[in-house]
Image 1 (tube, rainbow, N blue to C red):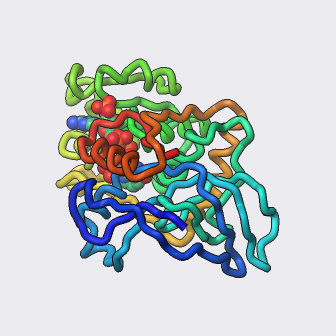
Image 2: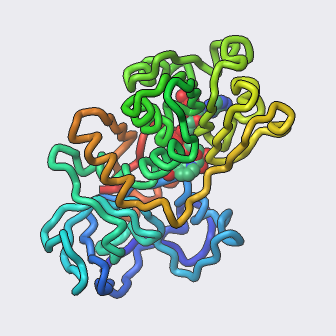
Length: 308
Ligand SMILES: NC(=O)c1ccc[n+]([C@@H]2O[C@H](COP(=O)([O-])OP(=O)(O)OC[C@H]3O[C@@H](n4cnc5c(N)ncnc54)[C@H](OP(=O)(O)O)[C@@H]3O)[C@@H](O)[C@H]2O)c1
């Protein structure tokens, strides 16, 4: 089968078309013919070599943890799926391929109304947003500030938090303020227009920092009330102890099940309560993958990049 990967670290141009053996389904797994794959900033880190110490892998490396596709083979112990089902998958790696084998607990059926592009971009960001809110353990009546509310993860977190009945203040750039309001945020402030240290001072019980690379963390501590929580996908603010703020760096644990998060998000979508934003669809070939990684490296992508 064909796959798009690399045999050395470097710029997007290191990608090449590879010929690899077609994978087989394990007893509890499925093989998916990939219809489209999402491209994440994480894939760019894998390619550049920035992740090589943290996650040593052998070449060739084929990135890709977000896919949508058709099941072509099922393992002997797999229930509830059949050949021909169109599913959203979250394999550990290898999504930029014609076929992917993955355990069936990493897949859910695609809602009929969800487009292939939307489905291809959902898994990583959706699962992250879902579990970040669980880690935040919001109680009824607590106020939540989401930094990076316009981002791929943050935009989903806004919608889940609203569905769960919380009051949400979103922070994004002024050009995305209307978008964040349309997602349901009760108030939106902009890091490039408003004086956040003024308007958000001690406003929230919980800050969820989903800004790119934790850009909000230096300031964000001022937005949390004494005794509150600061949950970040990346960096944590210093001196959280002085304010008795619990600072939590979100990490995946084995209790966080892809199927639970993806099932929840699929139901939310079916109920018309989840908007998903696609930034650009590129062709699922060498040119497309290089173009997508060039965009990822520029860090100015609004929405998900999809290879189809
Ligand atoms: N994608 C994933 O599945 C995943 C999983 C785990 C962790 N993460 C990490 O989580 C972070 C967000 O990921 P993402 O995919 O959602 O990124 P993204 O789509 O690029 O979103 C980044 C967000 O950060 C905001 N932002 C940019 N500059 C800012 C600044 N100076 N101050 C405050 N906010 C600023 C952006 O606002 P504007 O666009 O309105 O300027 C946008 O809302 C990244 O650091 C990523 O590595 C991502």
